[in-house]
Length: 552
Image (tube, rainbow, N blue to C red):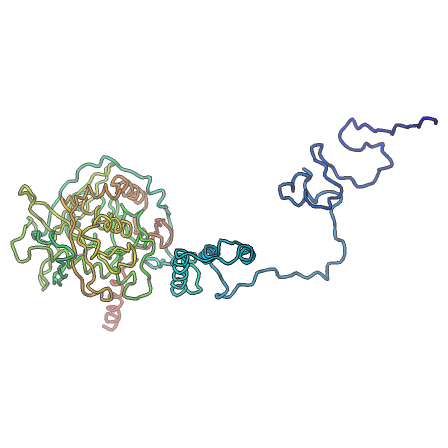
């Protein structure tokens, strides 16, 4: 048998790259898709689908040059006039067909341990007698399910659908107001002005009554009703203060009240909107407030996870603020030794008018000056509520405030009548969480005034459906500096914020400006407003007089 003849095929060596050479004429003008030497070659036909069905092997046989970018990509060249777009959006399910994640988890937990084939397992194992423990467990599950269905029905978990509450700004922004600066709270927290010197006492006005120490012994079992005290407390703003008008002629170049300065110092804790008016006259700055400003109101549960609604009901945010103002005004005067000799300062109350019929309230006004550096001195009017005798017979000046409970089921969830005596720390921690901005402002005002003590009263409604009758459940004393440390209140940061704002306005031309807290974002926004802004009362009175002058 002759040997088989074998002819070696012609092998073309491409010395310039990878692929066919130019002299390969039999493959000329045929489409060619480039590929890489590292590409793995798969099967020509895989009928079992064991390789390509595995998602982990999807990229194993894929070219590095990409998919669908080569010469063999399918191109549809026919007329596409007959093409129709199919709506693939999912139709929303009715409310009764929706199932929340909580319901699905409850459904999975209540499935029997047999899994997907309980009937098959039951046939294989035969009927089994349930133990008494298993029966009790199933009864508890069914009882809990009925209770949940009765409470929520087919509704989804409300926490999954919470929406941000839309708040209105504290003042209506007009078109002719120009935004000149926006400062986020994250930037304000970085400011600091340490090593502030002790303030200089310029003058003290008013008179104080002594604190009645019997209120320190009040408990939830010996509660005392909050009584009406007919006394007038003046809320005079900076530019209308006659004492500041005299001081600004000889001392200081920045002027404000303790309420305004404490709001700026603690502004990073605020949630609700507020605004402050700034007037620059030459080298002097006056931090002021509008006539109907919200600074004099006391917010309730402002920093809570679920703040009060704004629906106009009895427990709405606005009505709770007015209720808190009434409670603090009455409580601060009731806990004093009324109709006894007062502690009088050299100067009388500067805001008492001769024709006022109401009795003078117990209040002292301290005008104190701080040196901010760079020839800047700020004069602040601070307030104190009463005086008491200390353990060594010394006289201590005190600030008195009241925390009010309006609904124990909202906010902290702690009922003061059952928790206050035994768990006062937990109640105070809940108030620090829900009213952090308000407590920070109170503490800052006490530190600015140089008070020796702060007294917090716990006042609750007699009936939670009646906002007009209240009861005093207890008292608690703190030193302002210690309480500031307890609530992580940084006074250096507060003074840093004040100094930055003072420097900012000092470099601006004379005029009127407005500092506002954004109603939805943690941001301070500064506007340049006309000089006649917020003078509507004066303008209305002038308009009423103009027709009379024209007739004459």
